[in-house]
Length: 71
Image (cartoon, rainbow, N blue to C red; front, side, top):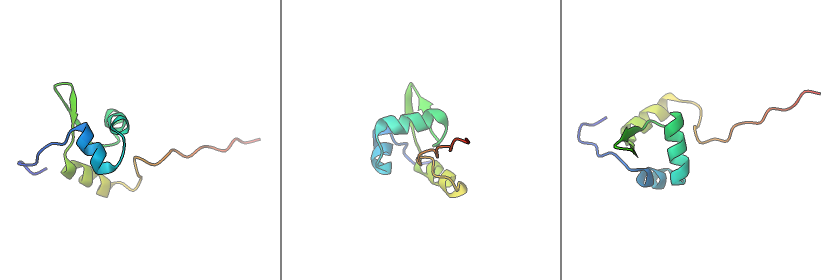
């Protein structure tokens, strides 16, 4: 993280990701995307997000696969 990097709000991160603010909040709560809670609001750093994304193979926004029932 660059020391001068400005944190993004939920709405800014949602706009960047082209997702809803609700989705961004839920992923922040679950730890799927790196976030910091400051004074009751979520803050995001793009450098942390990109660092996590390059380290991951799985898309945190991908829908979970359903399991097929065995008969």
